[in-house]
Image 1 (cartoon, rainbow, N blue to C red):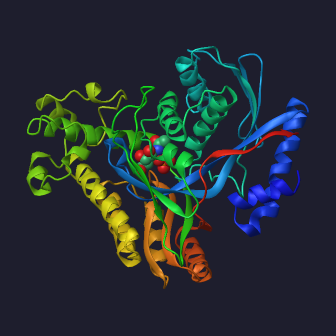
Image 2: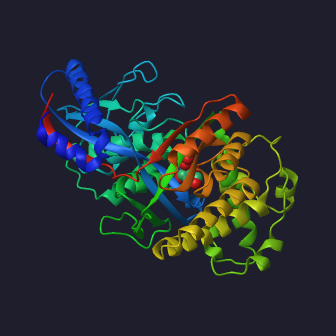
Image 3: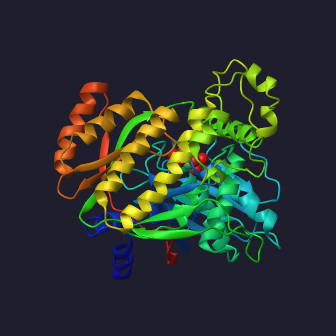
Length: 457
Ligand code: NG1
């Protein structure tokens, strides 16, 4: 590794971090050679993300405004002549090695196994490819402090899928664009059992330094290869401000089941509204309609018996099974969150373009209230963190980011108040919860891509 590396990493990371990043890349290359033997290796990276605003809107074809973190996962890869995929992780205790052959039908590992994040894209790309795909030897490095924090709502699992898809596509010369790979990675994640949206994969692939990405999650048509196309727009982040990320260190075990219940509640809302608006497919279609007319069409809560009486069969709306003992579905308030959140994303883009940072901060605060009260996706620790963050002078807005029920809070803060933030929020959160939070300033980073090809490990 030489001066080129230093220059290349300087384009990706903040100047003070380049030395440490260089050491990190070097460690990974050495490990790769020890595992798979010396020879050429290509190095890719995929960032995690924060979402500035637009929570739980993507799977109802709405709007989102995420940015990439400057924390990422590295993928070191060498093409194989056969179809075998061998995957090692630098953190081998948490992520034991996996090995499988690429095919159009790859039997999954048990649910929750990390290897499925590589199998998903491998199967999808194999199904779409004209010829059999080459396998790869792969080393994944996402360890702290420069890796993407796991389970923190900053999308480390999507970064895995995106990275595996990117590596397989590039080393097989499949020629997908960044946006196409983002969409395909979203599809591939279904293999893991997630019913999520496309935000995480798009920001991972398309992010630009110091920018947020506005994404309209409704496709505006198909490209020549049959893949859907989406409207995106880079929005510069305001100068003189920082985004401070505070990790609550709370990870709820049942996020996925809570998440799937929210997906179901939105779909129940759509099914009910279709009786009045037959053309409606997603809650996004309510844009432009007066919410005061829509709201009375949606019950506050629906039990299984209510669903039956209304002729709604949930298993036709979502391919996830829910226990019949589950709490009633809170249809009205969930839909209200998604409708108002889409409006706030639009307003945020306008405010940022106009340089109205105060307005954007206020919209972040409103978004938090909505996702917490209407969408029920917060938890005590997130509320404590948000309240503490807002007490710091220079903070214009604070909200949870990601799916919720734990994870991180992001705060928009005037540059220079980082130390005051840490001095106030860290002990305050510890006093209230007994947990020391992780707090870091996020430099909105660069999207996924090749760092260097054919390096000799
Ligand atoms: P995270 O926070 O990464 O679990 C999830 C979904 C997003 C989006 C957000 C909520 C996946 C892979 N990601 O993100 O698409 O719906 O929640 O805004 O399901």
